Each structure stands twice: as C-alpha cells, then as structure tokens.
Length: 204
Length: 204
Image: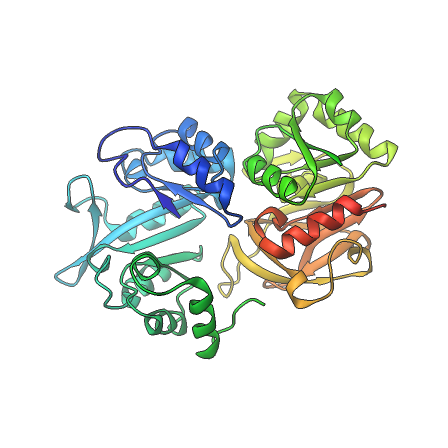
C-alpha cells in the first residue's frame, strides 16, 4: 500500500515516478492511492506498476469514479479508502484535506453505496489510532464488516506483535502495518513467526 | 528465450514483464500482431474488466494472432483475465463473447456469506495430472496469490488445478499448448518464480 498523502490536499497529480521505482523492486501486490481523481490517472497508476488503486477523497468528490474505474479495470482493482473516527460513540468520515470530520455522507450509507458501485476491497483507517501504538480498533472493523462481504484491511494502532494477533483472532481479514515496521525493531519474518506461534495459520 | 507479453492495455503488464525478466527470460511487450506471431512463447496477461479487454484485443487483431500461435502449437500462458478470456462466454458488467478456446463460462464467485468476494490473497491449490508440468507438489510450490471476483466454470477434463474457496473450482487449465491460471505468478514471490521458470522450460 503506497499512498501519496499530500496529493489530494495539494490538489495535484500523484508522484508516479516513486510508484514506478517501488514496483520495480517488489514482487508483492501494490495498491496505490492519493490524488487519483480520474480514470486516466488510475490507468497511469496501473501502468506505473500498481495492481490496485485506492480512492478516498476523490471518490467522495465524485462517486461515479468508482463505477468508471471498476468497469475499466475490474472491481478487484478498486479499493475504497475509508478514514473514520468515533465522535461521541458515532462513526464519522474524516476528510484529511479539512483535517476534520464531515457530516455527509454517513459512513454506513457510503460503504453500501461504494460497494454497489463496484469497490472490491476496503481499507479502513482508524484515524485517531494512527501512529499511537495502542492496538487495533476491532469494533470499528466489526461495524464495517457487517455491511459487506468484500475483503477489509484494518489500519491504525498496531504497537506490538500481540496487537496483530489479537486483531486476527477477533476475525479481522487483514491488517495494515506502518509505524510498527518502520519505527521499531520488527520485520515481516518476525511478525509471521510470532503469529504462527500464536496459533494463527500462515502460508508456507 | 524470447517471450512476448501481449500488450492490449492490461493492468499487470509491468509486473509480468518484471517477473519474466527476473526469471532469466528475454521478455518484450508488444501490441503488434506480427510480433506476437513470431514469438517463441506468448504470455496473455490481464487484470481488469473482461469486456474492455476483449474489445481491445479484437480492435488490434491480436485475437487472430493468438489463434495462429495456438494453431502452430507454441506455448501460451494466460494469467487471470488471460485465462478467463479463453472461455466461450464471460459475464462481468454484461455478457461478452470470449475467445472460445475452451468450453465454459466465467461468472461471479458465489458468496455464501462465509467467504469474501473478491477472492484476494494467498491460497493453496490442488494440482491435477495436467498441472504437474508447471506446478510443483510441495506446499511451498502450490501457494499462489489471487485477486479476482469472477471464476471459471469449465469442463473438468482441462483442469490443471483447483482451489477450495467456498465450493472448489478450477483455477488452472491445460490444453493443446496452452497453460492458463487464475492466480498471479508474477505476484506469488518464490512459488511464482518457480512456476514461471517451469513455463519457460515447458515442452507441451
């Protein structure tokens, strides 16, 4: 998952050269997001080596973009980015361009609409947990899970390996790791070994 | 070894190119039917929506070129949509006439609520007699990366591998000089590299 986090905020095109350099090095599926405001930009991301594109604010601005991208590249290539926060026990969408929550759409309605328009995967980000290392927001995952059967990746909050095991045991499909890998002495070999030890099935 | 990867605007062209390059082949990408006709080995990649892909192939006369390659018996590898397009009929945002190289149709994976659709991530496959040339029997060799919403409903006698994802279904076929897979060897790390090397040595 590679996101050009300033592209939408700055209203510019994403940095495709970085994506190209990354996809030359890695042989894992790459999802690219940030500033993909048209099918032409989505195509450019896929041509630059992405396997999937993630639409967050660009889909909120123009929901049709989901239909267009799914028709052109297939639903499996279209990931919905969902930045969420809890406010007084109610789920709200967070718009990082405004650095605050938005009233509309309602997250529940938005998930249903996006899936019916052709989203094939959802990346759920618990914005308030980002980088705080307190553990994943499993209830947040559960509230999106009951709306759809597309795969969901939960992001935000992993501070140690136990947090990952807890989320997986609670039934989370997949988790996104950022801080945990970058700013601590962890790597994927260690993560896999730990999860295996915790009794979770890992691929051979 | 000259390997021509058919370029009709498919999503995973670059990663397929990179994987063949790393496997020691001399890959070229081309949308020229004559280059495809002269190729020693042909790869038909594909991520995307089937209707648009079939249209693009036909618009460039690549369907006829592929037919010629097939009739002279040179090896062809289909990946993901490359496999799906070989069927008679593909249902995805409408019904499309496939290349018709094998009996069968492609339609959405039925979801019973217990599995996620799209099918994304790593799954072990079960190899049949027809699959042993290209897919090894060890657990490590049979684990591949998938990313698809639609599956093949084909004659059992062409099946080279199946996956148990909900109801088991065919994820690889072998007939004539053709091997085609639903999974992504170019994203399947070491198992994928071994698969690609075997395809390069394959004498159907």
